[in-house]
Image (tube, rainbow, N blue to C red; front, side, top):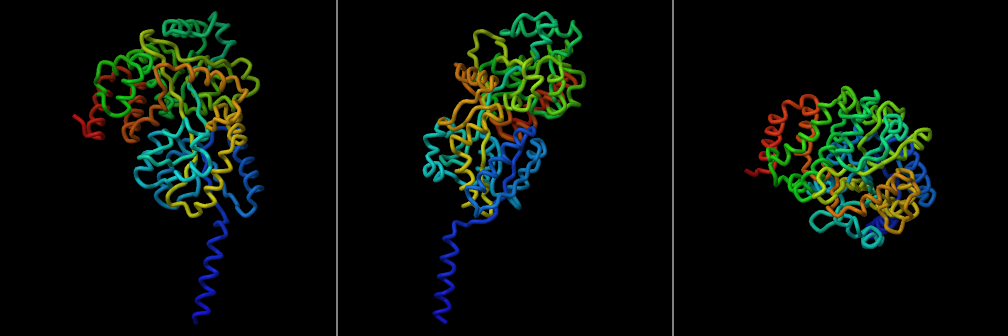
Length: 410
């Protein structure tokens, strides 16, 4: 009997030393065939380098992914997920739903190669994510439509931007396309108008629940936004479009501009790329220091993952400078790894120039900087505003009531 017990213990020890090889499930949000192709190629390379591990990948469209993620994390979790930095990871880390990766940061040298994004990856002194890439936001535009409307250059000020919109509309061209059915595409309009009118400090106070939505400064942002709505500078029925259905209006030359992150550039059709430019969101108040949104994406291991050792191997593989450079090049973004080569993509390069020349500060993004519940309430309010701007006071009052309830602040 002791001999059998000894054999059992020995077998258990041998099994525990196999590095937990086996299957890992990886759930990936993606936008466009180019992003999916990158992950398929990378997963194949990982499996070739780690033949004892089989990756089961699930590719989910971005908007559906956001809805399904909470359910995964609280039930049958995959081993790796793709997500967003900042408040987005802190929300789940605070609830004990993400694995602590602090030892991986030390073991893999991420403390050095990902140093600039350490804070965005952290909650309460622990690190919960591997950053993959970051990107700027700005105005994509059709050069040929600008020329047709007699617009000489890229608008640098709000006055020039409004004048460009006026000329485009007069020429029978929709000035701005937006997929308002995906509410976050509206949030970027609020972010930039607030950053340009009120500055980074006030913007972050609002993101942190420390400023009232009935504050005159917030109303001023919506009033500037309303100028675009009242003059019909947005496409007709913007709330009926998603990002995926609104973007082709620009690439096909049916609308002139779109405020969006550079992550869409990798999926621009070749025929449209030569005619598509990109410029910084215009200055509204020259006394306000320029600030930007610079959003970061990441990979995480859920706390309920079944094969954490191999999930860690996958993250270590993806974190290399070579893989990270290829990701950024494919996505039209910037590599999170500071040893990775900067892409030749012109939109990513323009984004880098914008982000490195932002004396006013850098935010993540509306729903990446804010408590999730408040962000959801705020973006619903933006959709109501786009539908009926005359109800602005009521919309802001509702947002303020939500803020007081969510943050329990008077």
